[in-house]
Image 1 (cartoon, rainbow, N blue to C red):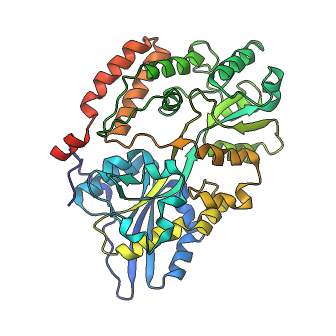
Image 2 (tube, helix red, strand yellow):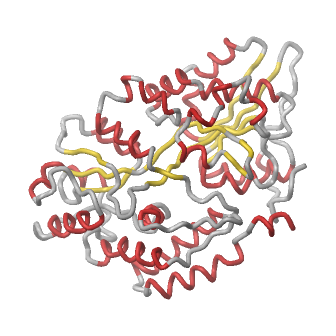
Image 3 (cartoon, rainbow, N blue to C red):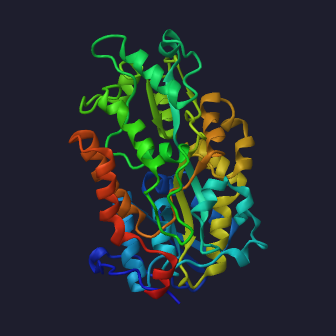
Length: 413
């Protein structure tokens, strides 16, 4: 039985696709997928191939913008109607898995071995399991790695790039000292990813045993202090308005931490530019990065669970994932897909494979997106308004306290 998701807004004017009705000669699966990647499932022939492999099954795919998907999901869960299959962002899996709205998949793994979690990067699996049940499968993944200018880093004594926090800071100072109008790196302000990465690298564990979150570790203050130091010392300047790619190529900001779409942008937009490389995140206690991307799940109200599971199995197949990478250039979560030469031909891309083995999902707790929003507010205060880090984190913890829902509190609701 589905549980309530708090005060879910009923957005009844959205015209959502309802549950599939069986056609006279077969089954129609309604699928919600997100953004440009969703459109490529049709444009590159994946939906057609699945239908050819499963006569009598038709897939009705609706591509939904990233900015709309969360509200659409709220409406679907509140009304108990929506698609059979849905693409989910990894950061809000817990919000919806907690309602019991997803079909548990464990019983299907024996007949559909492509769903087996052992096929996927461990960090990708973290967001597919809720309360011990498999409720989704990874669809594609991303993580952050360090991009750096090989020539400019060599000039300041780091030809292989920085390996540690200390080296990252030393290299940044040396790059900044090149002269006026030259800096060390591009860092996104108001970011909800890099501060957590640095915190993990400093030994912080946010998620508690009872599915709450805890930001009280002094190591979190230390990590935020390290991160914001780059802003405060103008090593990663605020408000320049420079295009990060052009600034990187021009040598103004010779380092950044980015997901794989930046790799593809450099390859596509600057094909003659070769003075750059990628490497694993600089380490403190470890070199952990964050794993993001998307999962595929099945709503528990589907009238066609076998066909929906078959669709997830098709998307999770090794060859499907390899082909989808070649067509769309998003990274496969299946570890064995990375054995294909297309994913090994450029060492700069293969860095992502190595980093994915040292990446983890953001905490799978209720209201994590809301907590993130509050953190971005605090980060802005620290970097822009010069609030003290200790006092602002204390205020942040106070603001998010009503948002934290532990296992016991969830059971009571």
